[in-house]
Amino acid sequence: MFNFGRSGNPALGENTFTRYGNDLSGTESMTINGTVNKIGILMILLVSSAVVTWKLYYSGQALTMPLVMGGAIVGLISALVTTFKKEWAYITAPLYAIAEGLFVGGISALYEAQTGGIVMQAVLLTMGTLIGLLAAYRTGLIKATENFKLGIFAATSGIALVYLASMVMRMFGMNIPYIHDNGLIGIGFSLFVVVIAALNLVLDFDFIESGAEQKAPKFLEWYGAFGLMVTLIWLYIEFLRLLSKLSSRD
Image 1 (cartoon, one colour):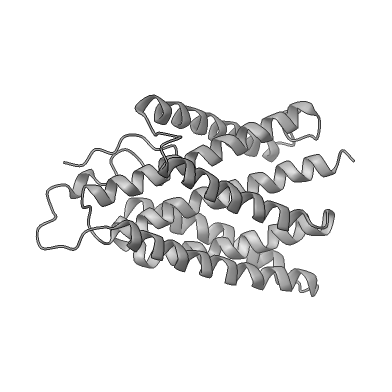
Image 2 (cartoon, rainbow, N blue to C red):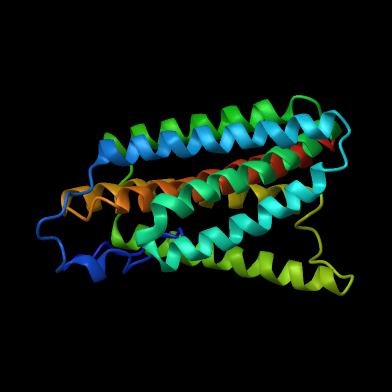
């Protein structure tokens, strides 16, 4: 029976592989290389669709915002379907990448219009963080111990609750004070969220590696790639928010 422990990433929960533990006879097994290939495919789809809304925004097309909002909605739906129907990940994970690409491309264009150069900085920071943490994980500098997993899980859950409360309050014309501003508290909050989002990558690496070691079913390569994609998009958006706050202080 598989038991991978907690992951702060909601897409990679404790019991993700448990249901398949007794169902592996005659099936191909999940591998790290296979998952990496799936991540590459999802990244290509994400960037390709992001270019669409990016170009539409700068060409002044009215279709931009409907595509951005539609991408966010379809991305959320496909993410939920992927989480509950992991066998469909080979379809829903690419759909998620395309939909989120439309959203990310439009949001990136909005931030870039406000502060030129911010998007490239966020991309470089996200990729640099991914490479740096992967190197630290592979060399053993960072280990996903049970206490580490529990701490990141708790912090991620807390951030999710804060964002949910903020969304609900905005519906009534209110907002949580300070955390969205460019003051020291707001910047400190964004830094904290960036760190937690980045550390979720470590849990994702550990989760995928454990799946490969314990010979999880082959189709879960798509699911593992989807989980890592969720974290990368979150990290990128948080870098955009942090850089935007820092730029507005100049």
